[in-house]
Amino acid sequence: MEESGTDARVERLPASIDELQEALAAQHYVADRSIAVSSFLALKLGRPLFLEGEAGVGKTEVAKALAAALGAELIRLQCYEGLDVGHAVYEWDYARQLLEIRLLEAAHALERPPDDAAAEDAVAPARAHLFSETFLLKRPLLRALESAGERPTVLLIDEIDRADEEFEGYLLELLSDFQITIPELGTIRATTPPIVILTSNRTREVHDALKRRCLYLWIPYPDFDKELRIIEARMPQAARQLAEQVASFIQELRQVELYKVPGVSETLDWVAALVALDRDRLDQGIVDETIGLLLKYQEDVQAVRGARAGEVLARALARGARQSGATSRG
Figure (cartoon, rainbow, N blue to C red):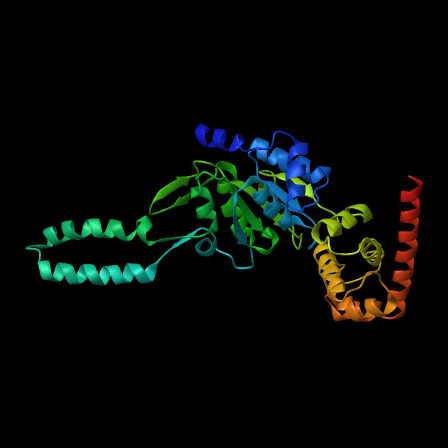
């Protein structure tokens, strides 16, 4: 790793954890202290940051907000089962190579080299040309390593738990040395290492060898205060009473035994829908009508809609009253 690249990135870092927290807040991302500390250390130490937690708690948004706060380019690799090097790192443009071969064959046929040795000498440079960067299709990981411009680069490797274990193994060289090896071209090393963030929904365990190369943070579902701040930051057009009642309702709903409890993304979708319906408070009717925005499985919708939703709403309104009372006393 070249020192000049490291120095260039350090100059762009926020000077403190508080400054980073403020920069994220300016991007409407509510970062609690643990997220701010982990992100700051990842930047300061040049280490990848591994974020784990349930789906919808805001892991991907950390990378997006951080890139925006730093004025960095965001390069995202969405992982999935069967992801391979050809889709993640690079592959050769075989169609263009084949066309080039046809053109070279036609040109050499016209030139008619005098003997086999001369013909071999004539095509050798062409072979090298076929496996040059001209015919290289650069995928997210390679693009991130080569992005050494005026702005830093944030590389988001999203939902790594969806990829196969073999792909995890391939990432070890990248995360350790910020380099990858292409057999036809050799080793490509980052001049300015990207800021790497990996996320996992923990659908399977990620290997320890990969985690050891990263700083680790578990992101839980937010508590009432944080969820309310998120709603206010992302949906400022929502009435304060509605925001408080939604935050309370979500907190109570997460206590119900469900196949999949709602995350922050579902909370924001619900608030957006309620605002679109000109609602400034919750009632049984609107909860029943819009519960499908919160719960993504029919079994959960059937289990909650009706009497159960009424019970959850009653507890939420009682919670909200207690919160308001505590705030006024404070």
